[in-house]
Image (tube, rainbow, N blue to C red):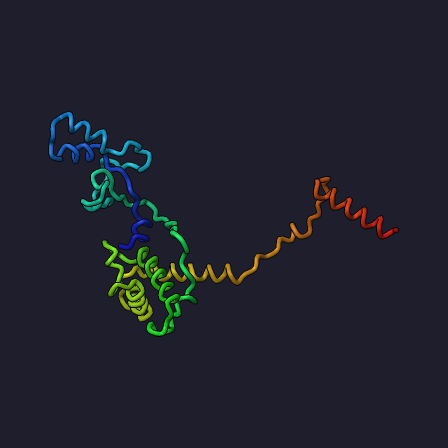
Length: 220
């Protein structure tokens, strides 16, 4: 399951208090005082940061983190009652347009700018829609683009892909929205266009004085 789909269906929550205490006391004991200090220091102090699970929650509705995860002992992933649409944020520039990728060109005939666009685009797409555990999993021979291109060819051929198939549709929706925003002018607001300011505002007074002076000069 990719990161995007995981966020759609699961949320990070605190484990039940009984489970927390059982996990902590099962650790290597260093004395009662040290155990008490460990409970006070290791359990997140602000429990409002995460929702908590119920003691009666079934294991089928929750997923455990890997043992190397820093909060593995205290948190887990709980399945949402209703799926959500994740909000994505990019560090730096967002996804570039498809016109910068030159999808129809041979890889060896591209310039350095196109290769950079391709690698950045493929990296973001794979991070969202490709299942991985290490960063090397989203590379093919050291290249993000080669892996993304391979998955794209399989998708176009209607074959099974490792990348989440719905991710290709989301990427296309992003591109369609960009094209629509860049090629469409904002429709003028008829109310704003046809509304005249009849109040004695500073702007209207100065305009009136200017018009009055102009009329006087015209009479002279």
